[in-house]
Length: 147
Ligand code: CMP
Image 1 (cartoon, helix red, strand yellow):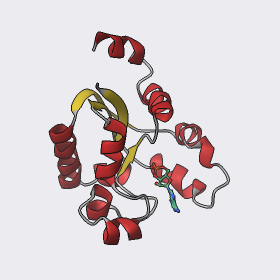
Image 2: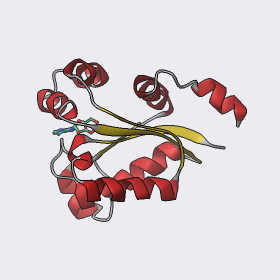
Image 3: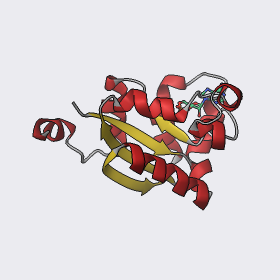
Image 4: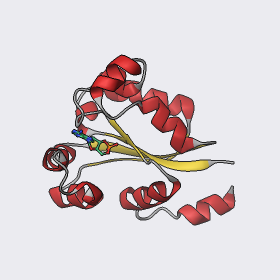
């Protein structure tokens, strides 16, 4: 059965047309694209989305970075979409991505632990919440029923 997840190409990667295109191609090759949008966050959007990280040492730089320029968001579908996309992204930390998972997207294109090219939901619950955050008009339940 198809599962939905949210994939985001972050400002560091959108800023580089060749990297943006490479990431887009990876998504096209591996998933059905249900929705796609280019957008940019204000600081408050960033703070709201990452509220669970408030207080962590990297929170300020994360909030600043995610509201620093345009992003591209996708609702994507396939079997085990959440796990598959996270596997393609690779580890959050750039050191681990580079050395333990060098063919992952973050391993190839990640710059730092913060500027790590992509985001993916980590559970069914966060996929539901995050899809609604980026695509408030999308009716996930209706869509799943149609499948
Ligand atoms: P993401 O998958 O979007 O979820 C939280 C984000 O916080 C993460 O990607 C990184 O961009 C950032 N992040 C997580 N851990 C660290 C860290 N140790 N140092 C800096 N940024 C981090």
